[in-house]
Length: 113
Image 1 (spheres, rainbow, N blue to C red):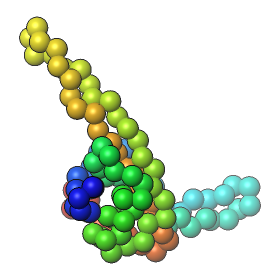
Image 2 (image 1 turned 60 degrees about the vertical axis):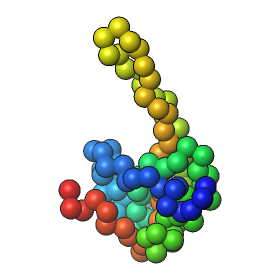
Image 3 (image 1 turned 90 degrees about the vertical axis):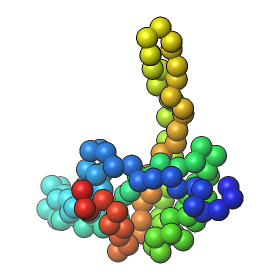
């Protein structure tokens, strides 16, 4: 990677990613102990460079958004096959990172949607 700006390509703004972000901040009720457990660790999804490591993703998010990162999970996606008439092609493979922030940290990149 040349710079931190080459690591993060874009935030992933899908129904699943937004639901995951909202659920990560909601309190859950423990039926066994009759307690409410506070969850305040925000989870965000980013599209990242194909050769980006977890450490590079963590450093980039911390530098760009000025927050502390707790955990990074990475998922590799295969590009789908597409047809244009008789020609069969393939979309490029891509990589997505789920970034969990430390308690009390927040990023509001998708609140305007």
